[in-house]
Amino acid sequence: MERFKIHTYLSALGSASNLIGWNLTSKLLSFARQFDVFKILDNVLNDVIHTINDKYNELYELGIENGISSDFCYGITNLTGMFISKGKNVDANINFTIRCSAWNKYSESLNLIIPKAKQILIDIPPRNIGNALELLTNNISNAITQLEELTGNLITDNSLKKQFRIANQIKRYYKTILHEHSIADFYPCNPATFAEILVLLGFSFQDYNSNSQRYLDNISHLINEIRQRKKNGIGMDVSKMPKILVTPMFGGWEPETHEILYKLGARTIYADWKIFKLLEEIPISKNSNPIENYAKFLLEMTEHGVGYDQNALTDNYIKSAKELKVDGIIFNQVFGCHSIANCYTILRKKIKRKLDIPTTVINFRKIGENIEQIQTRLGAFMEIFS
Image (cartoon, rainbow, N blue to C red; front, side):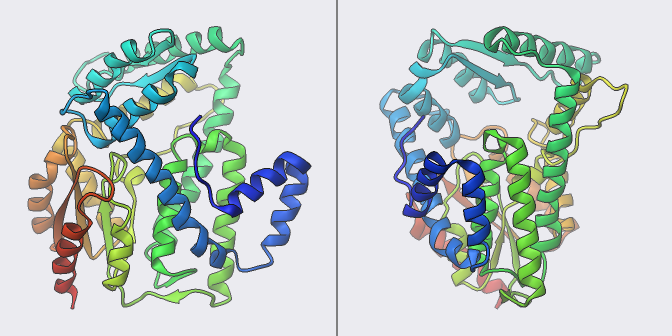
């Protein structure tokens, strides 16, 4: 619903699809694939990411101007600004609870910001409740009923299973990009551009760009193009560049980080959705209950991923770092984050004991606010690899 200053390429694509329809636009894109698309990406991706982040900052300031609580992190402040900006156009808001007091305060504040909108809440119970699975399954069922009443569309078990099949394939492709290509010795483009691809995947994965089937097709094309370029030797040898995991980024992070690391001779890997267990698949079988399977997925994600158990979360950081074979970890400590940012002390001790790789912490409050400080910290960190 927001207006963006979008790069000319994207505006032209939007105009093409409006004028001539998606079938012909797809043919146009097929023609464009004969050219060096990754070279085009070098020019476009940075603009797209900065356009999105400029909007994030704008909405952050809107939240601050409207007296947002100082307990809120950048991400929640940003979301609040979004509802202040465009909430009047919203018919309903669906929300999932997490074990974060600031998030719960934010959820409650939406009743005042968008009083006319229907609030659909899926409460994820704590893992230590014996009937957590039953409660969550009922909560999801109730949310589905409310969505059906709101839209007039029926959500069947088969329609859910179809979406889960698409989602599972998307997750497999995403993990292929992380496990096969982000840790490879040869990249299909320079590491800064590859990091930006990971950033855009992080942004878009949250809702599959509102079209899961098309998103699946697009990520499939992306992987095919990556493999084709590498097969033809088009790209860059990165075998001597240390792999640096930067995390977390979803609550707000400085997008200049991967550019700074690239100039310092490193390549950046962003893997939040893997670390927080969102890339785990949802089981599907003929006689299974898809809502219950989805509830199991959410409980697993909460218990071992983005939930409140710091030991489980830090263990998953260690596991993901091992699987991605990273050479160092940069922890992005977001101001105002009460659920993840304060786990760094535990994480650092575990990294020293179990991984024996260098780690450092950078602080974040707002995009563009302390780039010089980050540059100094990253410079000192990269001297370890000299």
